[in-house]
Image 1 (tube, rainbow, N blue to C red):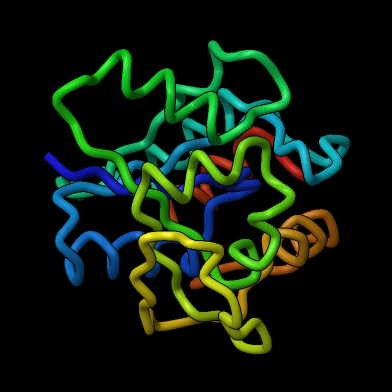
Image 2 (image 1 turned 45 degrees about the vertical axis):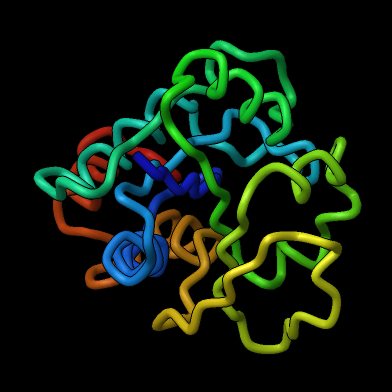
Length: 189
């Protein structure tokens, strides 16, 4: 089985994330897409992060009943901050019969040389890159690359958190069951 790993803070998961995950699951040669909730991204501050178990639960709610998508908390048991190369190594040991690939936006792809052991990643794992406006792919860094034109929505988790805090509606940007759970648990207030 070929599994695409879509890493993110998902703080919170929103419609933009879901459109990309669903597009990749149904428009590439990947069999499944795992939304990997990262407890701590080494390139981002962690101060505004909701607890990782709560973010994982929101992802589970968002993809409920979608058979080609799966929420993954695989990084929760790994050292922090989370480095993709360490996660890939661990997954290879835990699931030796699976093939893993990485899914990312062209904005993140531009930062690939800053990643721990990025040479190992590009040599050993295919990378599916969805184009993001203003972030052209000018260098492949030697990666086995598949460039995708996935539908894009300009939705920001930062803005969603801000609007929730201000009591504004985020309907249609976040699945209804996720909005309800955020509201019931007073997240991002």
